[in-house]
Amino acid sequence: MADILVVEDNRELAAAVRYNLEMEGFDVEVAEDGPSGLEIARRTDPDLVVLDLMLPGLDGFDLLARLRKEGFEAPVLILSARGEEADKVRGFRLGADQYLTKPFGLLEFLERVKRLLARHGPEAARRRGDVGELAFGAVRVDLDARLVTKNGEQLHVTPRAFELLVALLRRRGKVASRFELLRDVWGFQRPVTSRTVDAHIAELRRQLEDDPSEPAHIITVWGIGYRLDP
Image 1 (tube, helix red, strand yellow):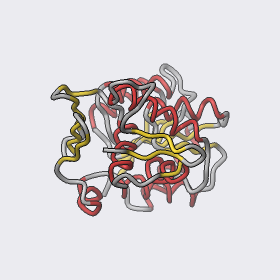
Image 2 (image 1 turned 45 degrees about the vertical axis):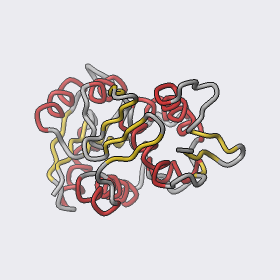
Image 3 (image 1 turned 180 degrees about the vertical axis):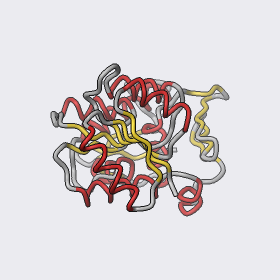
């Protein structure tokens, strides 16, 4: 069963989250501040992190940024009372997988945890057929190692941008709407913000396209979404 790290300074909420996750069979460790959460994540390499934003010592945004910069690729679910769109977009840009606003429904929370864990890891990759290498132009995507190279040079692509690239590649040139990409990559069941997708598309273009202002591969389909032209 998966190991989950809960980083939450509200002891009552952390205890409730821990109890319900353990009732589902997960192994759970709790950190009450940002520095402790960072240390535990580095030491235990959990399968999923449940992360509050307003933490003592080191806030959730900074903790997330440090983890992603260090190569931590496990899914991160943000739980926060901060429900502004700007906070959500910032979280996604830093590499969060999902964002749930407090107060939240317990059943929805547990379902999101299970969906995140089901979409990640070797077994999920095998079910999707994500083995080997995909390519377009001078770009190579190693699905096993989760590496992207262009002209033989490794690119530093964030985990969410990597998932978005793979989602486009799987469609083999077919158009994907922003909602479909939000659902497939971030796990949303309803539109939250198209800016989340657009920001990651811009990141991919900056790294993968020869001329990001005139993309040859990641094409905008106006009014709908995007498609990848190999």
